[in-house]
Amino acid sequence: MRENLSEPPGFKDKQYHISCVKGDLSPYVLLPGDPDRVLKIAEIWDDYAEISYHREYRSVRGIYKKTDISCVSTGIGSPSAGIAVEELARIGCHTLIRVGSTGVIQDIPCGDLVINTGSIRFEGTSKEYICTEYPAVANYEVVLSLIEACEILGYPYHLGIGASTDSFYLGQARPGFNNYFQSKYERFIEDLRAASVLNFEMEASCILTVSSLYGLRAGTVCAVFANRVTGEFHVLGEERAGRAASEAVKILHEWDETKKKKGKKWFHPSLLK
Image 1 (cartoon, rainbow, N blue to C red):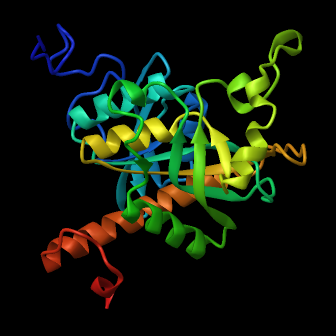
Image 2: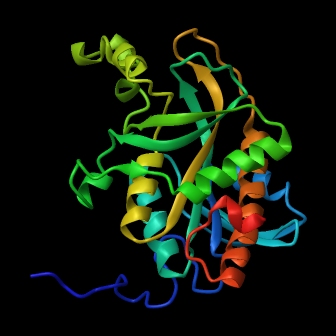
């Protein structure tokens, strides 16, 4: 029998993991994995204040170009990212943009940005929520706002399907300790390349899936740190990703205000005429 428990026992107001209550954060939230990246992103804004820091979840709220915005770290991987989505939804956050780093498997240079329109669900967390046939797709308004942000800022970007894994090593076809490997991964990257998959990372498919289930808008933008085919590795584009995501929030907020004024539920380009 399903128990009717919407909150963990003893935490009716403050969320158990992110340690925030309704009203603490903006409805528009950026989601990096690394807690240190939260402050790097917030430094881009006009002003910010730290709201909480509990476990891997560091939360700040600020203003970017007159737009209310928040940033919450999720830690590494889908289990902790799924918790973040759950608890952010419970305190009224409706728009989530993952901001991370990624390794690409196509002809994309380090420092460029990848905007995923969807992601293969190689992680296990989203499978606890819904069958594997359910797609992990980004909200079209978030994707379009990220494209617009990159165009405004002059950042090189690439659009397409990603792959989210639970393992940074074997799950992304890297050998483990003492060169441990499994034969099923020998042509893994080759097969994904043939399917036009752009990149690996570890959170997007869970964030996109759970957000879709809960009626939230979600998307993802990642800086390319590695090219798995060429062996290139450079820590580049981190600030670009944070700035593009922040600009996308500003754009989304403007579109949301336009939709309200014109009585429309969905954004379409002719609304701007």
